[in-house]
Image 1: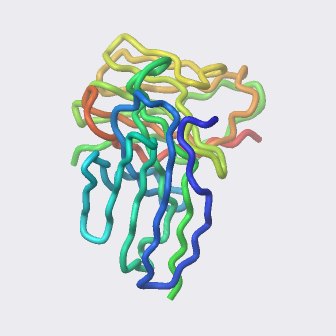
Image 2: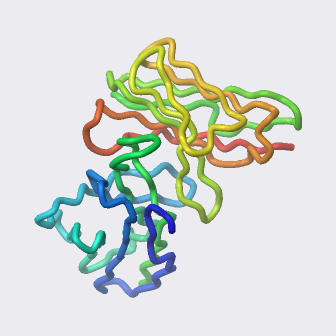
Image 3: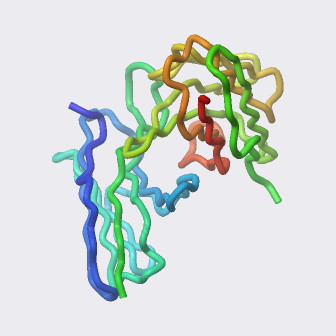
Length: 113
Length: 112
């Protein structure tokens, strides 16, 4: 089982739609959780951290369920500029490379006019 | 402006050659990392360094080497032992143990 698994997509949605990304992680000792955004042929950029209580940043809402080892990202009122690949990222809790970030393969989002 | 600079942006290597990718940061970050990304794949950790003069192998270290002689610099050498070096290489840094990483803009390495 992969350490971090995401729905590969692609998700093709119209402008204004609400879209949800899901992610599961296998290491129950994982410490921290993030969503990154990666544009085509560019470096990943931190979108938001994910907190146990859930957190919101404008149109973006992140949720964490430690019991289910599940992370989600909700984008409301999607814009054309939201088109990108969204990476689920987990800080490894134990074992080799402890404390380092482990990246999912990403879910590609295309927002259409 | 603080940030991470990777160079070159594009690099072409002949079979059997060693090449070195540069990564410099002026963020005063303690930890630095090298990742590799292949098309349709997630980022995979090659090497990381938490402090100067110390570094550790990541998940796919074979065929690569690094050094960390200065806090600001973490160069990656792709050796001829790396059988499939064509990929997008990303350098990142972070304050020790805290938060997410800041990435450089990457180097695209192609074997010709």
